[in-house]
Length: 130
Image 1: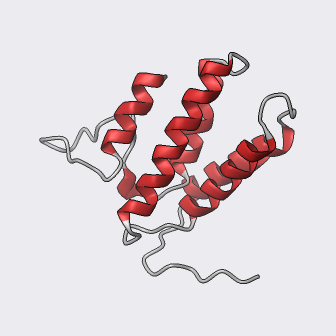
Image 2 (image 1 turned 60 degrees about the vertical axis):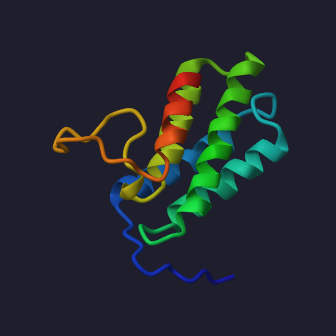
């Protein structure tokens, strides 16, 4: 199946590395760590983020990030995932997306005022959960 590359897609080495890290993690994690539906959702979300562009409808990216934040809370609440492992997974998932998402944890030091991103609320929610 061929996938059309979205206009404005800026694939970077960082995005490719993050996507590869997520796919490797999904291959090596035991079934006790992730339910099949969670594993499939992470794969689908990573695909959606890596193929999104700065021009992608913000609502689609926002919905993906909101669902990831919810999954992060679920993994933490399960007790089988340490906070550091959930952080690593979410950082790599976030890094699959376009740079316009910004960094959920580190503000841009060059900006005089914080610039809200489409995912700003999700980033704050994820920070509270982690």
